[in-house]
Image 1: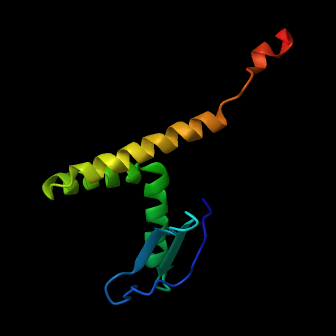
Image 2: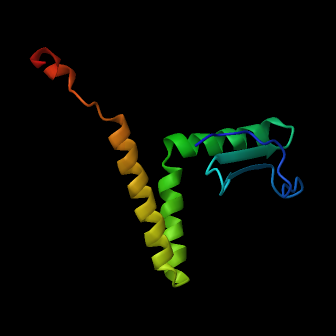
Image 3: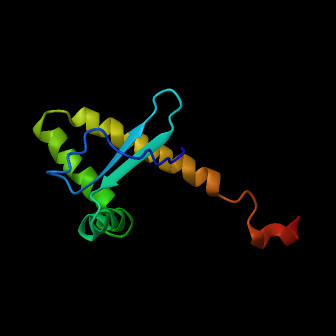
Length: 111
C-alpha cells in the first residue's frame, strides 16, 4: 500500500481541533492515503508528534483495536469486528510469508 500526504483536510475545524490526522483507502486501488494538518504553533506541532509517537511506540493501534471491539460489542456488531480481525491476521500471515527466507543462510553450504 502506498502512503501519501494529501495536505489539508476538509473537515479540519481550527477552532476546536488543533491537530488532526486521517487515514483512508482507495477502494479501487487499495492504496492507503493519509492526511494531517495542524495549527501553525508549536503546541499543535507537538500534538502531531504525540500522535506519531503513540502510533509507533505506545501501542496506539492496539488501543484502537481494543476500543473498536468494545464499540462493536456494545452496538451488537461483533461479527464486523471478527471480520476485521480475520483480515488483519490474514495480512500478517501473508506479510510473514513474503518476508521468510526460502533457504536459511545456515543451509547454503549444503547445496
